[in-house]
Picture (spheres, rainbow, N blue to C red):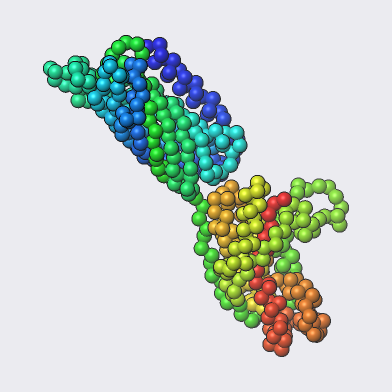
Length: 441
């Protein structure tokens, strides 16, 4: 093996080792699963041969095509293989003309995404990837008087490759610019110059230096990566009149217990303090989460988010903030149901609305939703919201209505009786068929 061959191999090995450390994950298995994936690609373009001091002429450009595949891992590092095929031609004024070179090449490469190396961001549109590799080329080359890599008595020199082709080591190096058009599909342009460990690629072994091949190819890449898909929301039963005995205190206690269960994961570590100083649920949300002005609407008894411009515009506010550089780790959705229905059915309905909202936001955000944790909780019948909305309304006898419902043994039945007597209550109930959205500060 020549000195330059050994140095090239050493360069590739030394290039791979430190880049693996750049891409190390600490302990985030979820992110690693999203940044690691297999891919396949194909590209084609032009090829130029630089032989023994031969002048590079664009009218001597020939075809080059490659197919390959590889694995992307550690956020910015990629390893892949390529198999290429093509033809070459070259000329040196008043000296020689290489009529034709045909070749097949196969090599292994490693590339690193420079943009993600210095500042990683999932789902970037543009990537700039320098690469280096090592491989082998089998070729046939001829001029008017010399034929290298052919079989037969007329051949100047046979090789050990298939069909008598000459075999030479190659060291490709270059730069790729990749543009992601979707989470799985990318277009790219690759400019590569390959050192060929042979002086006979141009069929003129002058002995002065080895030959080089340059290629410029456009290609298409498909990535076998995981892309989150929103789940279909589960339809809930239509609300029905409560058909069992209940009381005000039991309902209020159930709502309070549900709120505590929904928020327990977001409370800070326990601190020794008197019980009366313990922060309530509203204080916890205010301290750690920002309430977004997102109140997605639903139809009566349904868990599907209405596909309205108003709903889309509200989610777009979150998307615009992320475009501006805001990092969001958690989005919490809390679902509610209007209290005129059965309590058990309303609990299921509110849970489905919270899940449907999380799925809707995830779908609208698209690639931006990757890495965000969605937490959906259902709060059941929104009695507190109903009495608050009633108190703030302009309904004429609102104090009498509230007192009647609160003092009733069956609050749901009393509400339905009041609704029949005061149809304007329907507007209040419509506003309770909703979800509220919180995001981390």
